[in-house]
Image (cartoon, rainbow, N blue to C red; front, top):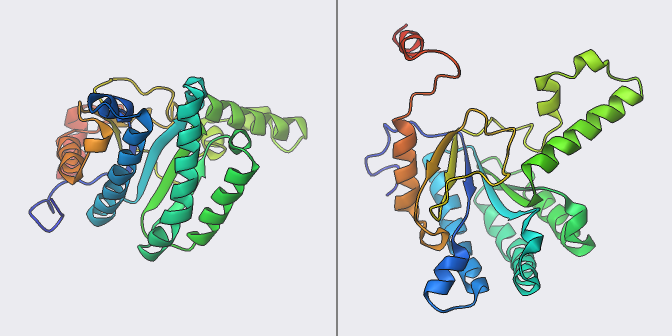
Length: 251
């Protein structure tokens, strides 16, 4: 379903985040190698990027590979890294042509020199795009993100450039991976699990959570709009009462 087909009155989130879960189970149900589920998941990424762009979403952040995923079988990890390299090589031109700015967050040192260089090149190629910002979280963990922000602030304090009393919530946020983007409005997790799995631990404090049993390779535009419809029905209070929120709207 597209925006033009009757969804224009929905409240569209500015920033959508997704844990793309269920690739392995999708493949297992078809007696295919797990990597085939990840390959099919790339198609779901393309469709979701297109759907978010058409809907007017400003930022889409996808959890592609967590810092805990290194514990998976070596063959699967190798296949995932190869698929990531392939995407960087084959998808960047299309992203640039469609005005999508690509960025990658996470510990790049753990990804290896070659892949880190490809990431730098892909980000540079799309840096001037003025549409959707697509962020891929690779070798990323929410606790890692908080720790690296704390280290950065500690270095500034130790160097005398920052007063310890100035280490506020805003200061911490400014040193985190998504500091230049609006805070996530909508978190989607596919595959039926109901947890955030160390994804954007700091940033999800006031995010609306949406869980679906749909496996990621089957997540299509209709599933995306189902999440948008659910989000549109939520009342976001940010610590206020419902009456206060309604009064602000009426005023």
